[in-house]
Length: 213
Image (cartoon, rainbow, N blue to C red; front, top):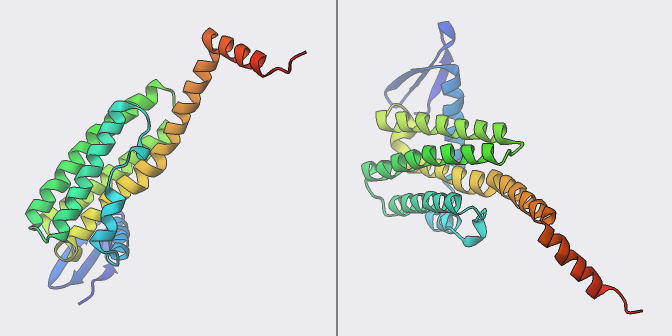
């Protein structure tokens, strides 16, 4: 039986289906629908198609050793979860990896945000807001799966968790984090250009390339 939703007093909604009754806020309902939609889209992908996306490659590096090590660890956990889901491991085993993923993510976000402050990254507030949104979604998924409070919690647990991990790795790290990596590269280049040794080197190159008279 599909889930249906009806509006109730006090701006809350009730979901009915599969012998289940859930009362939730409008914001929770919107997140529920968004998470469910993305998980359903992911359902058509075979696990072996996901695994190449979740393998870390050196090309993903932002050239900041601590950040790169953290990113690699995040990718490895997502790949581990994908393999567990493919092997039809117990929900409890998969959920433990998911919880560890969330703890690692929160710690990484704190480190990364501090670094973005230090380098005066102009879009750091927007980046921090993206982190907050992802952690809010993680908490939402965690509570629902752990509490078994919704239809997808017991029918699509692996898809819900993998979809979140895919969004963090391929969506955020390989998308938004590339922007600050490019900013850091530009700053490094500008800093080198200001160094006297760089100016002397440029002068030597210019003289070497000048036509003979």
